[in-house]
Length: 66
Length: 488
Image 1 (cartoon, rainbow over the protein chains, first blue to last red):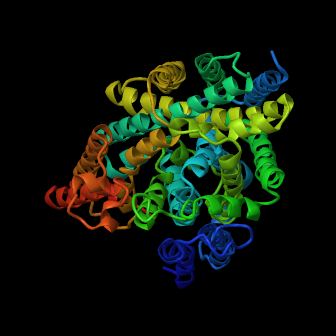
Image 2: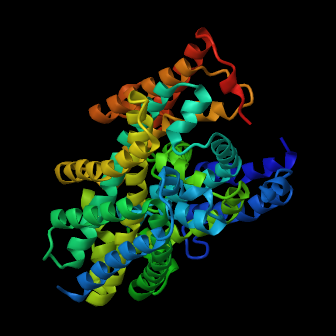
């Protein structure tokens, strides 16, 4: 297991912690209740995180050629 | 016929024509018909998979939940994020194995990994039984959309028949090529409609999204968070994981991963999909906006929230465009479900019991099963009750029972035997059936436990029982054949 792949756990941990510790409506951030905002943020961040994982994925090159 | 219905029917006919067009010049053996000859690039697979995810469930069910339940609705955004992250690691392995072994369906995968055609029969049965409630939700949604858009002139039952006939025709003619092309039309339309409604309605009625949430919060201080009991944080977390595990276990979703050209298609999709999934947010906004504008929709009627607020706000031609988008969100997944069920029944059940059947006969059987599956589903749609989300959750719990045996099959040294896989799935499915029929929850089954455990999604119990039998039976049964252990 390539260590950088562990990065992909971050959004998942974020979602777990959010449901436990940020189960609240206020403050409203970007127009959204706080819990919703937090979960949306985890989803948005998973995109660049997976991009980084992909950048350093050792299987990436060989699979492109198939 | 009013202008709304005219637009809806024009879109249905256009999508059938696109399906016929897509088929031209291609020799349709079973591989072409069901996995598109494994030649789809990133964009096509993306659209196909997005097409499966943005279904009537998200369109009507998602807004209905936001309207009726509030905070717990957020689980929909979170489980898809978790599922996409998992897909990055799972799908390239599935795809490579499928290509190497020339697999066509999800059951083929289990047959090959566990070296047991009868396990394949069982997996197919679970898949088909799980997909029928899913297809029912699509047809129910279709019925609601067309009958609402007709302002009462077409009954929901007539609308269900129209939808079922349309989807059957285009699946029979064009197979997965039709699905992919309609998915493109659908994605543009649904994106435009959902963004427009999700932004316009809160501004029109409340002056903005933030002030909409403040107005709802002022009326009910708990509604926009998770409740302390029932659909609480532990319900939320267990549901997010269960649904994420089940996400790719649907036979049609699993099967459409075979359509890709190479393994990187999935890795790239895992980067884009989370952003695309945020379109759901705007679906929720529509449901939230409806709370104070069209109050009083209870139970299953909450699924009407999006349509009711639209009808109250817009001219009939706008309803036509919204309705057309909604109809496509039912047709695209509906066509994939039909095709997957037919392929499973034919290749993984019919062929096992009639091994001498030629490939041509298997392909023909698959095609003729399409209208049969349609008819069965129409029957249950018209005669069954329940809301869209409840039905879908039951199907989800069923297909999730395939996950443990699937997960272990990805390991290099899989200790699970075919007997273990079978025992796990059988006990898991039996538990889901028992719990669904008796309408139990963890709290009613085990009333002595603390609230935090009582609130767990009841599917967790089925999965634990599944895992227990899978491990125990695998340890006491022999592994006769080593060849199936070579994963990758």
